[in-house]
Image (cartoon, rainbow, N blue to C red):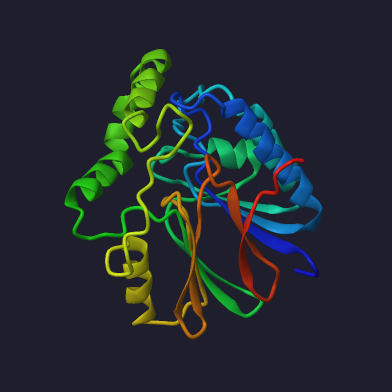
Length: 253
């Protein structure tokens, strides 16, 4: 890493129709990426960066050009950008990889950096008892259903998807309807991390999805970090080669 940092962030939900400050948040995100670029060795985007994303054969959702251009600037400079699909931008295929040069992840990713083990992902679908959610997730991953959706004209398909997305936790007042911390025995990601630790050691579990910044010690040298979001919290995680910290975007004075 040679004195540089690895950055993790998630859940910007760019393009969310119920939020009125999409351009402002995109500019804040791009400004942040420009500031960290000189000291960034790798960038991990942990899902739901877009409120909706679907790649037709010759069409992608309009907008987000500043953000996409900055990702291309990162990869053109030799900085690896890992893009994880979330439950809102689940239908990312090869466009982002080909045009922006990102490394696309559709599932959790385990890696060792500077002698520390990391398990990284979006964080959804970790409760095996949530049959309804798992059924929907399986349906959205189904290639046949994806092809069927592609047959819908983009004007109709994207409008339909945006309407579906509006039934999420996003509120029209620019807030996120994120539940408060439910407790160690009810938080799905915490329970999942503890289950993994019964099988093997992981130094850092880093997830998004929860829209709640969390830094929790799970065991003597094992931690769970949730990166929060870029809607209300504007938080991110940083690995400096020795330890991970959870940080917040500095407000402009």
